[in-house]
Amino acid sequence: MLYRTLGNTQETVSAIGLGGFHIGKQKDEQESLRIIRSAIDRGITFMDNCWDYNEGLSEVRMGNALQDGYRDRVFLMTKADGRTKALAAQQIDESLTRLQTDHIDLLQFHEVIRLEDPDRIFAEEGAVAAFQDAKQAGKIRYVGFTGHKDPLVHLRMLEIARQHDFQFDTVQMPLNVMDAHFRSFQHYVLPVLIERGIGVLGMKSMAGGHILKSRIVSAIECLHYALNLPTSVVITGIDSMEVLDQAIEAAESFNPMSDEKVSELLSRTAGAADSGQYELFKTDNVFDATAMNPEWLGVAAA
Image (cartoon, rainbow, N blue to C red; front, side, top):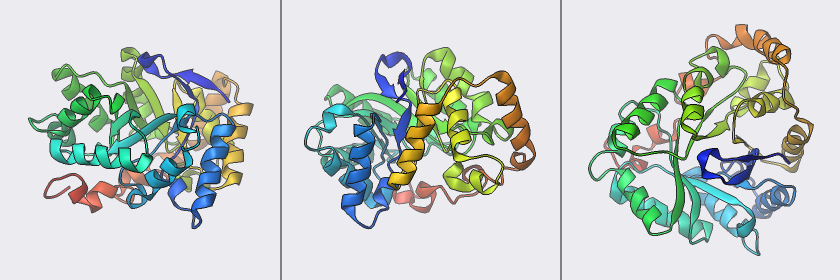
């Protein structure tokens, strides 16, 4: 397993992260636990999750899997949807209970996908106050945010945070062979994160499998491309032992890619990527869980 430093935190984490959504999808909970513990036993230390994944089941299963000494072996991350102080605080406590832990290593604002999300989060009695209170109480160690819609939203979140003298430890965003060509987080957001020493969490390296449907690139190529970027962690969905093997293989076989190899991959994917048809999380609301459930945000409409 590859290990990297998480931005300015000086924490060492696995370059591959276990996606939390997919480990709540197995019919048999024991299979979920087997995947999580096998991933940890094989060197994956970064655990991704979210308060809303599978109506909380993903956190419950991860909490069960992290018993018997496994909690101390991982860097545990989850996310909260609430945009108000009160709702975010409630979600934080619910996540701690489900995960059966007294602290979360990294808590992130989830689905920052609207231009108004930063204003809601940093408003008086906004969610940032709950995060700050939780950090002071020792419930969380680091703070970040996630989003998948448009790099402009990420840049605005970073700017509003700067106006409030708030420094993020991490930012999570799509980084893949198609993103490089269309509304690109790689081109617009990544340089800002590197300049500020913010830990880069890559996600959607295969866009939920949609990129593989193009038949232009393989799963290993997708993971290698994301690992080749200055990412601290590439979070990937693992819903079976076979997919876990694939993720481990990608880490073990990774070598820094030559400029020629990167250019070849990008030229191969350029035509298919220019309309965003394989990155539906940018162009459709199919991935926008909080848009379909505005009550998770604590606002009247998403």
